[in-house]
Length: 447
Image (cartoon, rainbow, N blue to C red; front, side, top):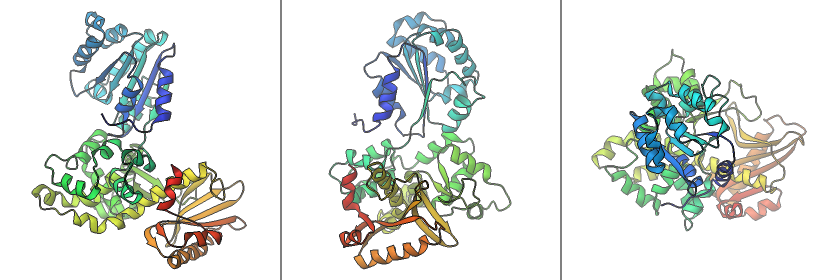
């Protein structure tokens, strides 16, 4: 089995709940492949428990058979959910992909509510419900309209691992190669554990594999969330290819006279898309842009989807990806750089303790990151380049950054200027001049 990586806080939180002498209903959700099942099974590995993966049909019978193998007394229970839950009173019960139970019988939510209210609430039962359909878990299980509303004692949306955790999977890889891997896998444990180094040799082999997960992974992911996937697929494709405003997205997918707002809202709620506004503006700003939330989706729509026919025929050359990959890694490296800055901020190694950080743009001018401490009126402006820069190039970028910073409108604020790149010649000299310059050689400090 692959070594369990990170998740210390989540693991600790779950393990603290298990020995409590009271009822617990814990809901854990997050996109497919993010590691929910592994986290829970790691938490309960030393505790007697029932683990059941719900399927699309006949779950009551399957659950009864599974539970009775662990706790034989269950075989004497009645053939209904309330009787089974009563027979497992005081036990740890894990139901994975709980949305499949809801699809099979929407009334199961009320049944579970009744079982909790009349029996389990006064017991030491630990009921843990997992789901990969973020939309269904938030709407049917967590919302105030749900029969289970008010019964849960804890919930957790499991997010992808951070970039720097890739080092634990690939301890001998260079930071450059880890950025390349992250550009395809994001922090999704399943994808990370598929990769072998060297990355490009593995990717070439994987794309030629007739049973590769690349072929139908996105279809599975979208079907977990939506019944009609075509429009959502086209919107994701548009955003992945750089159409980030509603007008650009509408024009790309040919919906010029239709409202795509509900589709975008659903994609945001399910965690597949994020909406950003300039860091100095309010969240409801009309200048919002949309971005694909994880690198795997961006990679798939950028490189796999347009080439599916060639991949299926076995004639696709991975050099097609390699030629454009450095350009693609520009936004990926921005995500990495943001995580790097957050770690430096936690360690107190920046000229300010920022409380907000984000992009800024206006009328064709952009700054990759503006980090703000509004109470102290301090700002750090940062550019990110997935390039190797000479000292002269780096100095030019920093001087232009000083110019652009004046457009942000933070008059009277204390300002600093920074640069993060693949490599920077003469960075020590630039730092001595009062700039803040980092490259991949500084990443070891985060660990």
